[in-house]
Length: 161
Image 1 (cartoon, helix red, strand yellow):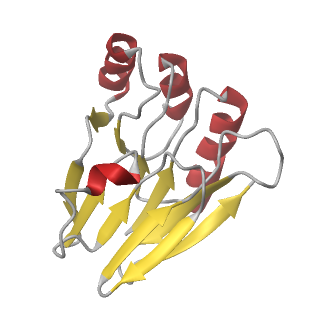
Image 2 (tube, rainbow, N blue to C red):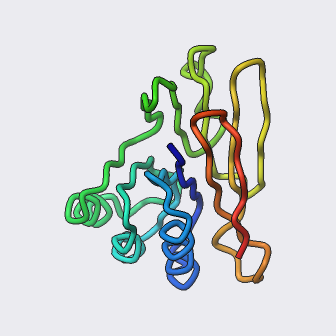
Image 3 (cartoon, helix red, strand yellow):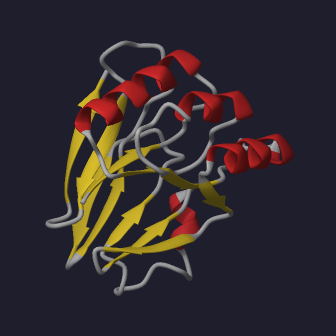
């Protein structure tokens, strides 16, 4: 199973449109958004995904009522961090700010996803991978990135745009 990972879209609708294209072209099985969507109209663009999306809210997701309505309308699953998932017998922890791992992240989690820093991170600790695809809401072409994580071996690739 391949998971698309995106963070900190910050209502950059043009980039979100490109992100949807990239995930659809890559034929990922599921997408996880690690927060900072910002506005509900961003989720309307994400509705073009050919796969389901899960996620957490970030510190810039202040319009919760509008975001919640769009999430329900599009069949997405979002919650306050942390979000714990079990896919392919892998325990996955999702937060926005990496400081939110404190008290929740344990050795039983093989994959830990976050955003917030806008910096790429792929770090291994024993049998655990911490991953952040980095910047995707910027305006500099070629410096934006989303990630694809393969749950079989926890490898990750960046899709730059």
